Length: 474
Ligand code: ARG
Image (cartoon, rainbow, N blue to C red):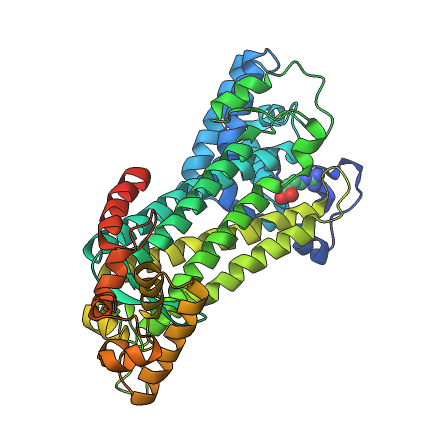
């Protein structure tokens, strides 16, 4: 332990040169140099990972006889103390010390004295930052997985309640065929399930430990990379030292996964926006997830859904930003790569907020089954059922059945009535083989009930799918 009667080793030595690398410099950096170089403003977020990585590293150095047990113990205690100081908000982060790695090491020097200088044996900030960031991204993947599962749970619960609720399904945003609302919601459950599988794949790829790659070439010290990898919960050490400090594809994997997920959320968000208009009234967002207008007292605005839709742009932007940073960089570490963190931090904050807001909206909305059912009465959504009936009952080729049905739709449109309101005689004038039995297939209920094919919208299939989704995802 340091002698408290002696002054601690100075953080910034004479002439203002950087204590970590200033040996060959005669003076300190220009103020603007310090500003452009510093990442502590954002990479302080990596503090817990940085300290965990250092503790694993020093334990390994001691086990391998590279540093003494006493020095390792002092370093470990010092790091533990620093973790406490940061957690309690008592740590002073300094821009002059550039980044989280130097800030922690410098404080360690203040606490334990020169022994702190042994921590950086057999490593470099290049493998250190790659390790810290992988650990952080791994946690971000785990958060994302949880958020996705929570939203799936909310959607599956709603789908179970609405296996029989009928609404128009759309293509081209034109009424297409009746579907069940439960089926519609389960479509999003599938998308989110694929998002989760992307998370799992990317997390597994990211879970290799770069620590010990050192600056770029490896190290002459007899380190045990398997031990540090294991201590930090990685599956194995990375295989190539140059690659270890060069690539950020784990962060790009995160951003690509986040981008696809945000895209999925934006589509549900858009549907919520128009479902909640007075024209549709398919859902009513709870008061907790609606906002009013400062001038129009009647308004209930779906701001949360609009923001989920809008914030998707930030997530896409983050992916574009990091791809652009990495494009064309020669091996190995380049300072450009310090720009890797903020896009990932922002995407994580943004996406987790969007997932939580979406889950809240879905859990608390009120579904208007009547408005949905009424909407199936416009736009002739059972026209395909009529064509199918002509094929199956009268043996008419589908193309011809399509044509006949087109005539009947035109007839109903001209009369301003539903297909089911057309008198039999008028139908027979278009095709003489049509009988009374046709009316049974013209209701929305009959239409959805008939779509029993695997993955189809029939209420019975939806009930099975809800059960299966619970088993697969919850
Ligand atoms: N703050 C740096 C970053 O985030 C740490 C690595 C610095 N390495 C170096 N050789 N300058 O990228």
